[in-house]
Structure formats: C-alpha cells, structure tokens
Length: 404
Ligand SMILES: *Cc1c(COP(=O)(O)O)cnc(C)c1O
Image (cartoon, rainbow, N blue to C red; front, side, top):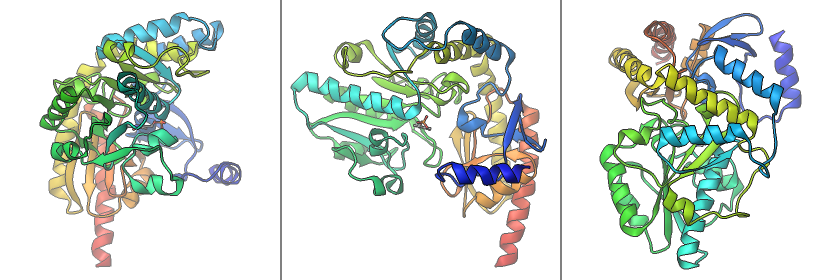
C-alpha cells in the first residue's frame, strides 16, 4: 500500500528530496500515523511547524470557521484577520510594522529588500552590501539563497544576487572585517538551524548590535526556525538583551498553514519600503491570518512559552546523559526545544533506525541529530524519545564497532 504511493510519488513529483520511505496520513497530539497505521512519536513537528501538535481542537475550529467566511481577498482590500494577526504579532515581538508572506524564504526576500531600500533612501547608491554568516540557512529563492552560507546549496545556481559577504557566526572580528561604507545590513539566524544548531552567543549578538548602531547598519534576525516560543522566548533574540531592526518568522507562525512574515521597527518602516515597492497576492490572506491569530491566542492562553522553559532543561539533561554514554556523540548544542546532538559520522542510519522503532527525528547537516518537537511535549514524551533513540544508538554503535 505505502509502497505503491511511494512509487507513484516518485513518478510524479520532482525528485528534490530523498524522502524517508513512509507515507504519513494523520496526526494526533504529538503522534503521527502512517497509512499502514504505524504510530510515531514526532520530534520533528514538520520542521518546527506544528508547535501545538496535531488536531488542537480550538485551532482546527478557528480555521474551519474562517473557511466558511472568506479564504482570500488579495491585498487591495483590508481584512479583519490580517489586522488581528498583525496586532498580536506586534505585541509578542515588540516590533512595529508587519508584512505577511507565504513562506520563510519570502520573508527573507522582503527583509533583504527592506534593508536595501533603507540604505538607498539614505544615500541613493545602488551597490549596497549585506553581511551573512557561514553555515547559515535562509531559504531557497534566489535572494534567500544568496545570503545562505552553505556553498553546496548555491553553487549550481550562480550568479547570486550581488554584494553579499560572509563572516563567521560567533566571531565579531570576522564581521567587522567585512564591513565597508556600503554595508546596509547584517543577517543571521539567532540560532542557526539547518547549519547544525548553533545558537548565537550573547556577547556576539550584543557586539553585532553595537557595530550596527555605530554605522546605521540594519541588524536582521532570522527567527523562522528558532522563533515562536521554541527557545523559551517568543523570539530567541528576546533572551539576549538586543533587538533587531528587522526580523523574519514563518514555520510555527501559522501552526501548519503556510505563512511567514517580516517585521521591522518604526524607524525602518518609515524609511524603507513604500507603496508599490513590494507585494504578494496571497500574503496575509484571511485564512493564513486566522491561523496566525489563533496560534498566538493559544500560545498565550496555554502558557506555551512557560511550558517550553519548564520542559527544555529536562530534555537537555536527558540528551547530556547520551553525550556521556555514547562515543559516537560529541556534543549537545541548542536552545529550548531546538536541540542538536553532534555525532562523529553521518546520522542518517541512526535516524532511520529510530524511525523503524517509531520515532521521527531529523538531521541538521550530515552529522547532527536535530530534535525539534511540538512545543507541547511533556517529560513522558522526552523519556519515550530517549528510550527509542538509545535503541537506535546502541544498534548503530554495535554496527560501527563490528565494522572496525
Ligand atoms: C526553514 C527556514 C527558512 C526557509 O523557510 P521556507 O518556508 O522553507 O521558505 C529560512 N530561514 C530559516 C532559519 C529556516 O529554518
């Protein structure tokens, strides 16, 4: 049954992913089921999207109610859900102006355009530069790809958009070395996700803020993966004592409905994009906006951010045990419920082994196991995850010893 669907998928879909060989059919809470009824504990949450898990009743009801009213209007008119969503995201972020997009990559595109326009309005030049980080990931569209610091993602698609310079995460000196009188922005993920789960260090981010302030360079923080409560703050930067000029969000923002946003301070909003400069047919449509609005309501009502703060130390402690216990794991890195186990070799076998045993986890680069569960997990789910992961680790370690 599953095999047939997979064969049909491979005959029809463009093969841009080496997919795991399962067909997921439904979800309930923090569990997923494939079409043969096998149950999986979900520690991937659709790459950090299903923050509240699957079939959260109030969320589903809100979406159904909006479907019955109005799905789409275009941005030529106002709609109430977009206003509500914008007010709520302003409140939890402390930013001033919001532009809704359909994806993370589009949010990054918008952020880059905003920074360029801000600098253009200051000095009229058209050769501004942006500094991005090595090992960063910002999405697959040409602008977002251009600031993505992993050459293998970019190479075949050159030329990129111009004037991007790369520096090293957590090395303020390397950023300073790239700054010129044409620099208009520095962009980074507050916690690097795809690149291997590297949180920005406090001193680094604070130093970046100082450098940017000195030169009126805009600080863009990509919170697409690490935002929306994942680190125990609504947005990870809120734990650093710095505030970005522009930030991006997506993934968990709509809790499963495709939506993203870029936000900015009033200073940037008043001196950058103007009517006619940017647009989107779908962005912030009533359906997507209703999802954002309900997500934020539910996170507030159910104290999800506090729950993450309570649960994360337990997850960290259990993962730290594994680091001490298994030779193949070198380090745990992460923040809140975004954690990585760095391993000596490729982790695909460990992840596949876990999946066979009913645990869905993902990688972050070839050698990091990424744990990015729904934010509503409890300690019992952490225990269940650890038990399965250990079985897979033991098998993997046994095999690698046997092969030496
Ligand atoms: C996933 C991701 C993106 C891209 O988002 P899409 O919705 O896939 O376009 C950008 N930045 C970060 C940090 C991400 O994790």
